[in-house]
Image 1 (tube, rainbow, N blue to C red):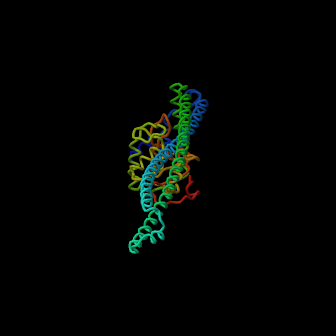
Image 2 (image 1 turned 45 degrees about the vertical axis):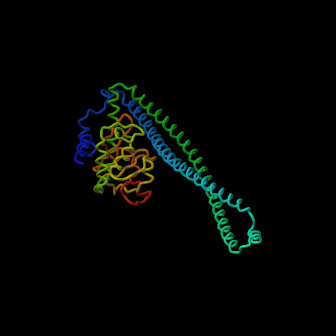
Image 3 (image 1 turned 120 degrees about the vertical axis):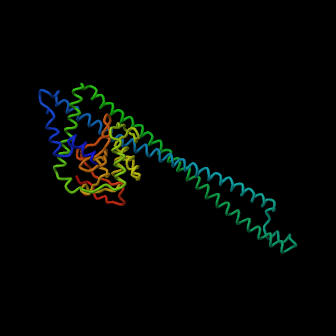
Length: 359
């Protein structure tokens, strides 16, 4: 955490230290700034494109997860179908043997056999055997009927799963194309800028993030937050911060590149917890906590569509994978619009809308 504090002081995300950091920097003015209004418009367009790409990334990751689940289900169903077919074959052989035995017995009714049989005891033995044979045949027929029904059910289910699989594959491909399109459009916008303009664009991004963070801190939000990380949370934080400097790549889950939810997924895997793959599912499925109850290791979900996630480190900071063209980094927890907070290592939890949406 000491390392985090140093990073935050340097980048101006701990409140008062931030003012000093920016006071020493040259302020944009008419003589030094290369068309600030144009650059801010470019920044807004790039931000919008990357936000759309992030939403599409969530759709891609969710579809990918569904494809994998359905593939496993189809494999299980195929095994069930194979096993049922084997049982059916064995029962049909048994039914054939029973039919052959009945044929050899002449198929005579018990009364006729009594009239033709001079030994009453032998007749009774034959009747007992016949009844056993009839019961066995009835059981075989019942089992055959049940297994044929199971086979049809498995086959219908496999067909349905296959249709879902194909639909999700198409959805995945569509999301993938959409992501590439948005990222390429954003890169194209950036590529048109001169080196000096790119530096100013980065400065505008940092300045906007600083202003949002300062506003968040000025609200007194950290006054009541003093919780400590759990043992699992410390492991998750250790993993996440060890990835600082690695590139953001959409759909990536490590170990060399990450997207935002890929980073939190792997970090909490190291913390001993399995969490959903996407930020939207993390928001939907994980227990929510009020912002005032937040502790290091918790996940902060951003934007109204839950399309971004970062891990809280304490002292008003998060570690996250920001967007394509950027690296895993530490930034202010309030630098983006907060939707709410979830806790991967909390059993139970509430889904109260007011508490879950504390800002």
